[in-house]
Image (tube, rainbow, N blue to C red):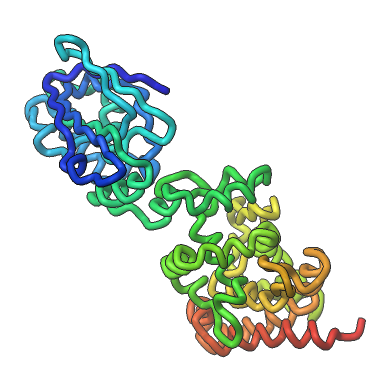
Length: 394
């Protein structure tokens, strides 16, 4: 339990009105209001309840830093809303010139984490004037179940994305647990401004593709491509349905990379064609750059990748291989192993690629309309189904 010592120039304490109306379960919420010299703001305050990571490079935060560093205008505390934190308790010295704030796990800065980081950066740079102040409110006695709602309500100056709030609510814990121990577990971001190569929104989109009960054929899971926000809504409203994909979640992520890495090669090998000429289907880094597309689930790199508009219908067609076996409450593959899933894609990849390329020509080689075309989604799905039901001769 970290204990942080504050030296407020002014402090005030009062009980919350909810304490009087708490009913059979007593509530003892206390507000502790501090006005602090900004240059004396202590370091090490935890930020566990804050729904997003801090990125102080945005222009709005640069303006806040400029206001803080301006010693000729000591009104920072009047212009800035300040910092709100949740703590276990606050202990005052006899003369109230110091306050020791004790934080437990999951407690800390609820709102104003960007302000806190800006002040800490200014102090570290030696730029924080002695005549600037900051307001801080410490809340104690807050029931844990209220924290996500408070975080979402307070963080409004720069809107918090819904995924960050859902992460704070613990809705992605099972995803984190399932991906624990994989080479890419630390490369996935779950909240705003958190570093990562792949965001949980994209994982939910991929799961939407394969949620065959939530979006059964002939419906097409176009939301996976057209609206990551809609996928978040679907997930929040149907979390248990998405959790049924847990046994094949890692396979789905690997298949996401496999489709991109193998479809071009499979097409060239099958037809002798040149998939590299498929503008509007494959994106290319070109020969003049050394940079490569990174495929974190496969642990590979390539100069080529499918545009999302081409990729999502192709990948989504493989949902034909997903089923819920009688008596099961989870999804599984219709085949015996993930290797057989990949083998099946190898068989259909040339035709899926050809159909996708022809569709791109219809739309002037633009990938975005491909991903919105219901008929195209349906045609690819049927191709996978026909190959499964009537395997071609070796």
